[in-house]
Length: 288
Image (cartoon, rainbow, N blue to C red; front, side, top):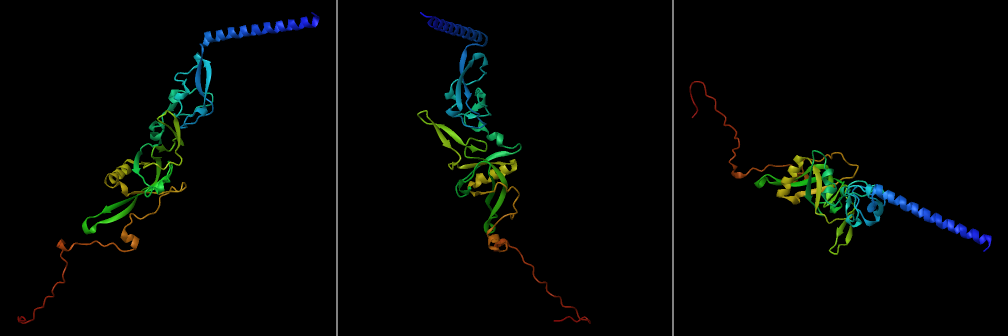
């Protein structure tokens, strides 16, 4: 064996020894880390930023191993428990996903937080004719008109009044103002189906924001004639009050004056012209 071969084998031996030493060192360090921080555990983290009210799908999740000591309370370890849920808060990329930051799509996702203090949310039936062909979405502003009947008998007439102006829409059906643009629904075969809500016209109600008195007035109409409420849609930049008559009637449309009819049987007496008195003649003589 020549000198070059000896040198080669010596180098190989040193390399193997160094690798063994390095492996032994890493193992010792791992044991030390495990002793100090616990064994490693797999947790679910955000692969990218997840925003508030965003539906959670498989593409935004990742699984990493971390020392058990660094696992936060409530951290999700099974990604299947997150599919189809909604984020209740912003979650940064790489952040552990906690059970307190997710929810099933429901009223907890934000409807109650959309109602202004002192206001109330109330739902009104909506169809294609009364609801602007259902081309409404949460965040739109509408005016609400009501068709009401006043008077009795021959004095009965129908009027149309503008009840409320610049009313914010909080929800159309189950879709709310800060809600998901899409919804996951579970099929009988446990497969999550993605449903877009941006073009959903299957809703039959519109939820608006109103004062307690306005809600009370609307409830009165809803109980009696829910089909007598109509919506008109405003431009987003149009928020001022519109100058409209107090009411619209058949007479106001046709330009006729309003007459109040009085029934013939009312017994009303009309004034008559008083009879003129004949003056007395002088001399005491009275006319025959």
